Length: 422
Image (cartoon, rainbow, N blue to C red):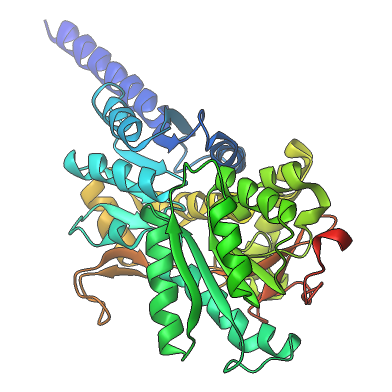
């Protein structure tokens, strides 16, 4: 009997050991919600490619605590689809960590569904201010909020373009055009308020339906007011439509600043060719001056850009670099410190992060609000150290031009040549 009991105990120990080893080798599964199909697919896939590179790089280094990272995809084509796909990943796939989502309307929806189920959501690029102002406890917005895009654009006009155009701000005519959904309205509101604070009077300020098919009325109004600088917030299709109509009607402006989304997408160059050269974009930096990065981050950046360009045959747009930066921070600063990977534990880890600017590949740092930010005590989960600046389309790619600390090149083509010379 004693021999039987010893054998039984030994067998049980072996089974337990095997079970423990098997558990230790199970991958850490993360739900990735992006627009893989539909009108935002090209941007979504760019983010996906960047995030895959981060996953591959971390897995090649041995994974996280000996476990590989595995992505589970959710196709967030619209806000409704984003909600259903997030719920599918949570309820059917057992996902407890989600990331994505590229665009603000999708980020709002994904984070809403994740919070309802108590799931940890690590938002990479969604920017609408409302994302972190709903009292959520498990949503963290790693990228910059919408107001920073507008502030970067206005600061660039005040601190750089005004002098290059040889026009004092008191005489400079600035116009604002914005798509009237979550991102465009949020950025537009921020630009309007910030411009007023800076003493800038807008000569034009109008929203439009992102699904508009004819930009003629808008372009005609802009021609009538003759702005020196136009700041436009658009998504890919409407940005292309606007540029084509501006060329057709010969609407010229001394400086054009697009804000993220449509003006950062490779589709713009594909659609209007070299006419894109000279357009500025207030957005996540595609690539920053390497001197602002920590030495170890500089090496990671070099590897990321090398892999991305080898795979896609072009440099990443700012949102793709931001997607990589965000998930790399998740893999190196958050998950390695976890024992259970439960959302409550991850939240505690994240709220202790205090990373200076230059800690992420795109020049950002990390410090999140937690209902303790003097500017807005209702805000929680916003990264106060996210980098936003202004870059410019060039003949061969893009260059960061503002702020000077992040810049890789001086601005070119100021004033912007007319269509007949572009």
